[in-house]
Length: 366
Image (tube, rainbow, N blue to C red; front, side):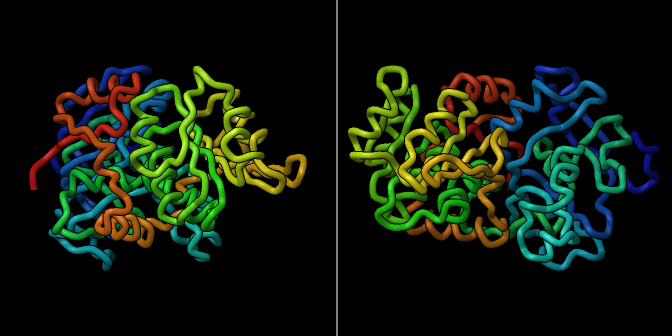
């Protein structure tokens, strides 16, 4: 932990993880004001992602932390070097990148050489921490959005229209971006091609909606929850498979006559990960979203790729998703259930049990 800053402090409330597994406790904290390259965002809402839930089982061994990485809010203050957003702007927050490495200079921020440090390091790159005065670590994904206020930068803040509800836009910063971006960017699925999506949570359903937008041929949703499979059909899946009741590989063969051109696997289940490659047509590609599998060559010209954030540049991709939403092509609002900030542990439990597809915390008012 770095020394306590003498910078001006901001009183905030945040959901703090103090022991592995939780629960989270909302506490009063002190936070530094924004540095020259930072922005202070007053949070209106934050989505809850399964990465947050996973971090609860992994984090807080060494020091308490504030999670949250699908924030949406209003810019309250900017540092002197900030140019792209102003006080009063509505912003959605996404993942962080350095802006200086070779990948960032090529406009490929998901390949940022400091990606892990910036998104999972719970500190700035110089080792400092905006929540250090309270003995808590922030900067998760460059935001830590389970709070009334957070520090972000121009790299992970995306200005959004004031005509749309900020609380609805919050989930665009990670899960929905990842699912849709995998179809649009990482796999570049084309009209008429076939795709199977393993896991129809928020990420998988975003992939289903994106596949429909590009006019994919067969769009197959695979899950164990009938209500999610029904929603997948409503959102664009041509076929669904209940993996508890059916032989998935045989069912895919029966649907397509062979296999599929692409698969998206977001569950991390080893059996489904194997199926995601086994059911590919020759030359097909499996996209793994859990970070378990890296790029690799497989028999019959098949390949697997590990996808981060759908290879999306947030400042371009989030406005694209909003455009599709406004046209009625990406109705992601159907996935959302809202919870008061004080009910954060209930929201996390509901997401973990599969009762809620995309929980969104209502943290503050406009």
